[in-house]
Image 1 (cartoon, helix red, strand yellow):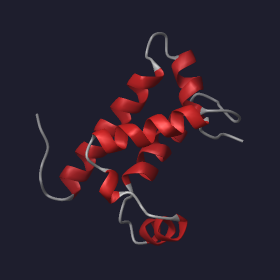
Image 2: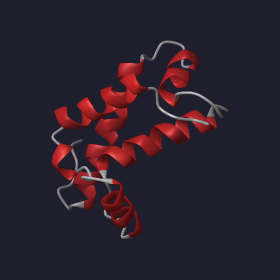
Image 3: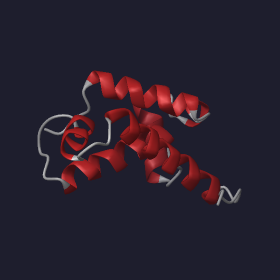
Image 4: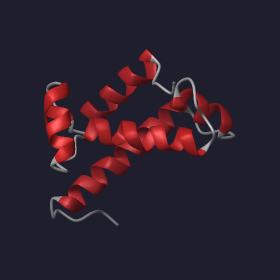
Length: 103
């Protein structure tokens, strides 16, 4: 089963907090499910899902997708994968909230 290792899960939560998105993270699983059903994106789950898709697209079926993608990327570190994913989530949230984006 594909699943984040504890180190990368913790790193993802830290990066979400650094990006100022911690207040938008669901408080528990029930809230996360409700928000998913109403398309009210939880930034932690959104980042998680993006990274899971990256792992799946690279053929991963077991293990941590961050570990796998970093090992297969040819130079991109696990920290960069997490940081870039969270930046992407933050940008998408800004656009969805009508705050536009940088660029």
